[in-house]
Image 1 (cartoon, protein in one colour):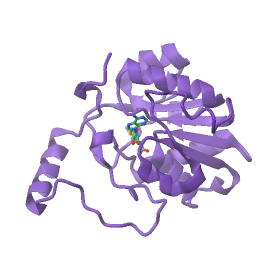
Image 2: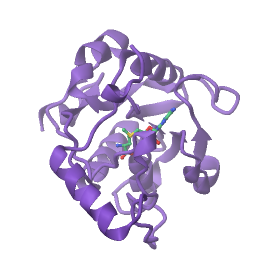
Image 3: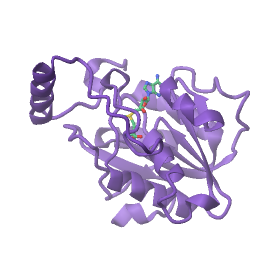
Image 4: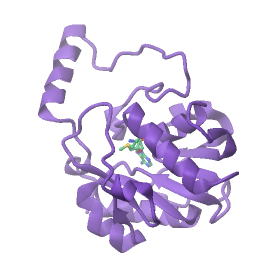
Length: 217
Ligand SMILES: C[S@@+](CC[C@H](N)C(=O)[O-])C[C@H]1O[C@@H](n2cnc3c(N)ncnc32)[C@H](O)[C@@H]1O
């Protein structure tokens, strides 16, 4: 399967209409550029839909940060793969226990290079290209949110996850990827519903391979 436009998470018709109205009123083809003061706030880097960027709501980023802190344990290492909002929430200093873990963000968008050594450039189409910088099986929890809803994309991201992971995997993606996530990584779908800052028309879910609180909340 290829990364056609159909694979990209989409805005609902209502949200898209509101966005188009806003853009035509302002005469801009870019989202507004107000600079938040907190460099780790979710949304500090503006969404760019050309890179399939749909940020979590603050509540969801917090919930996922709490989850990975709990599962990583004292001194645990967390890899956020194509999920910068969770990395940001871990670094913001607002979630209990975030000072007792370490985190990196693997991202295609070089704007996140402002996070220094925590940023690892990552292109899913070359799933192991970062190998020289990162030791295998060196993360207690790997959380990933791939850019496309396709077998091709998830298959490559699964290679990345397997390289990085000591065991625990938390994947956030469309519900339609359930059987592929099961086949590739033996993941189960959680009842927890991740929310985004803007409503998406695709149903999103979390998937895990361990006994998570997200399975039944
Ligand atoms: C669906 S979004 C997930 C973001 C997540 N919801 C969050 O709030 O952190 C997909 C992510 O994949 C990244 N991305 C886009 N193209 C990519 C590529 N070729 N390889 C890896 N990641 C990519 C985007 O920058 C974006 O952060």
